[in-house]
Image (cartoon, rainbow, N blue to C red; front, side, top):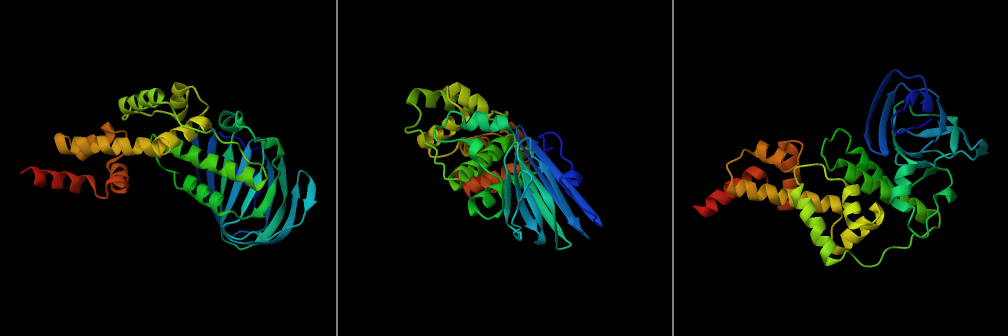
Length: 299
């Protein structure tokens, strides 16, 4: 079974191998597992999904085999690097495949609660209608999955918001590929609600402010809140918060004598290097260069 808190690669994709590496991370209802193998033999698949599961083949080609979805044999398709497979919750995938002896995959599992929280009140969506699909390609889902993969190892308080944003993208795309078309919320947030949210964000730049807390403040579901916030500000919530943290760091670099390390932690970044990366994206320079240039200007 695939659960957000437990995953055994040897059970899901079992095979003999000479070397094996497994890394993973969890963000509330979303989990990502990366499995790499060398000296790989025949792989046996046995995935019974408690939660929604998206598998991205990152390396190696599955050249021949047999696949069964919900116990029914389906036509085997070679799975190249970049190919995707989707097994909705309460469905199964079993079978076997032979191919390259070096291979790796990314498995993203998303809990039913995530779907309820983000999509239950969105007209035009019915996740019970989604069917298992093997070996397909879609650039938007590939990009979102790889972006979730890049968050492994991050300890950024905003990481879970970034991951959940990409997870929503994946499921919106899956809905569209299935022929469903969500009905979007029109209009943004009222000026009073937006001001209250911005005040809350500014008061919590040094902490882990969650999307759920912001949505509750706005009186909306997380999905509707994210749409309305972007319509009102031009940025998704996590990107807006990162920008405000960088702006706060910029002020501290100019007007305080705190070290860059102290400023990074005070502004909610996990390390000075994390601050530097975000600072360069937003300001086009590094914190050290920014402070030096400011001191030069005010002399």
